[in-house]
Image 1 (cartoon, helix red, strand yellow):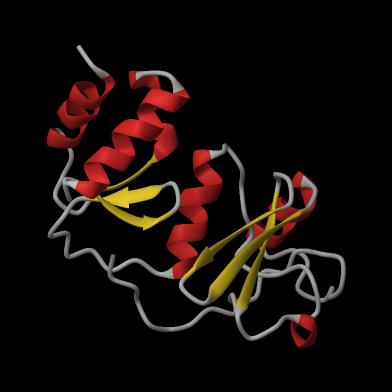
Image 2: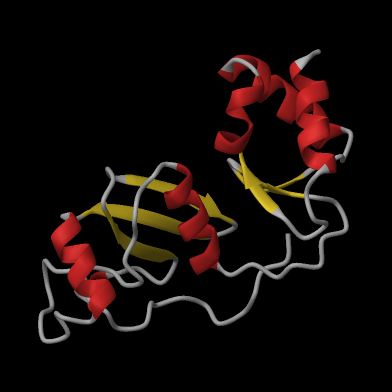
Length: 155
């Protein structure tokens, strides 16, 4: 059975509003074969690329926020993220959203917005998620609400 056939079988088992990542498909073949199959399925509109590495099914009515996309992306690599930047908000450009992560530095674009993951220790992430460091600013993950556009994004 080909990689594309295996991926199609996986997709058929999903709910209409499911979101999945490239990582979810890597068990169906080599990285190259999965990438080629994804490219083919996107071209024939059997799946919709929301952003690099994140996909949905055609006709999905699910509204996805930037925060949800960042969480999905981080979880696909086995990382945690805090809901807020760990730097001073005045230093963040308007077209960027920063998240503290247990992983490495990375960034990806969604339209005109760049989502950046900045490495932070697991302890600081845990404190931010538990709301234990609300009096700290620069250099620490904070538990305040994220700086994100309020609108939902439809794939």
